[in-house]
Length: 235
View 1 (cartoon, rainbow, N blue to C red):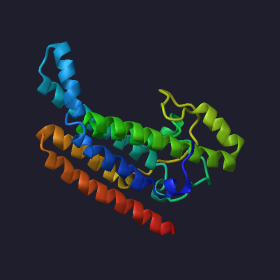
View 2 (tube, rainbow, N blue to C red; view 1 turned 90 degrees about the vertical axis):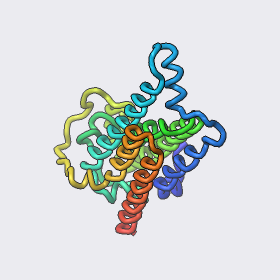
View 3 (cartoon, rainbow, N blue to C red; view 1 turned 180 degrees about the horizontal axis):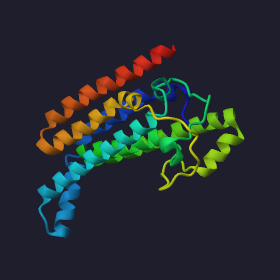
């Protein structure tokens, strides 16, 4: 089922709500998801659980960094007002950069990002965050694809057949359309996502939750400021 107009217009806030709901679930499940996995692996691998916990947390930070890079790469081929627009832009099909490998690199980035950040959550929080984000991303994808297909017809239909929706191909599936990446714009649009990666890395290094939440808070503030600014430009 595709997302409603209200969901699409407020997707930034709803993404934030996924984290707002998932993090407090420690009151139901007191064990951190990463610690639980590390302890389970430590018994079977006969190694130190604390060391494995740090490795897994570092892997989570790496996953968020990959998400930041993927979103930056994708945003470099779009304008920021398209990335954060309240309505779906159907004026052109982007078939350059990561869009040659996967149709929805921004949403794939969201899934990688939430999985990496969820290493900070309880087991229940991890499940709610990852499953909740996956469902919401698919609802948004179904809506965007329906409108793009209505706007572009056969040309988008061919692109849709050639390029996978969310699981990227290891090789380009369509020829380059000749677009040029604007990396400065891409990094500016996704600066908040790099902040998320820094927050998880900060915790993995220090094991101090205050470091994580301070950096995360600043990044979230930047995210909502960026979103609001771009949407006001178009209103």
